Length: 219
Image 1 (cartoon, helix red, strand yellow):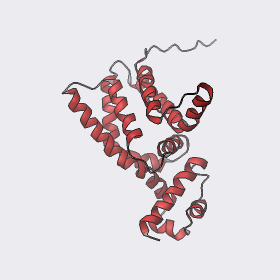
Image 2 (cartoon, rainbow, N blue to C red):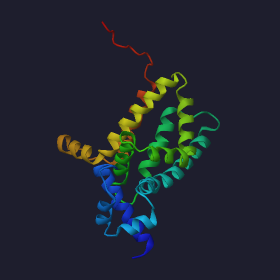
Image 3 (cartoon, helix red, strand yellow):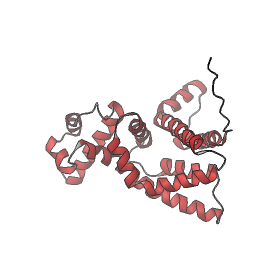
Image 4 (tube, one colour):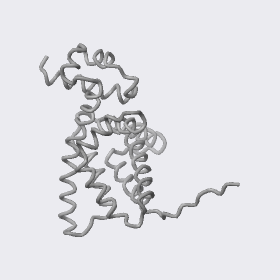
């Protein structure tokens, strides 16, 4: 078996099992069994489970970050020195994710499940890896987002971004099920691109909503 084929089989198996079971619940032996390789192959190519988790993310995020940088370059050229609108910034991010080539048709939904797990499970090494390796494109996105929402305080912007990530992760990770429900209930067939097109204005409206917070009164 060629080395690249072995690596791909390990990554494919790890990606699927992590998305189904979570990081802690997936053992290296489960991965090697699914990939039909021995444990020594995982240790040789990756060295540790943490490194394997990081490699799973890098396989998606490296081409995505390259696509995103080009999308931001194109956007800034079109804006000709003016700051991009919030809708334009969000669409550049979303379109880069859904239109970039994927290894299979479930690529975006699997990655979104993994991204959700990265937030909900204790994976400090992964967050550190993502911050170190992909700080430039995502720092650029955050800068554009800040420019487009000057009315928000830092705290409000923080929470709006978390809500945005939650809505995006749920919608895109569940896109197959949501499409099936829509077809069964309303007889409407849709695509992932169409879902993204509907999601962007919703996210933009949420980020631009009034920042007045009415806290409940305590007795």
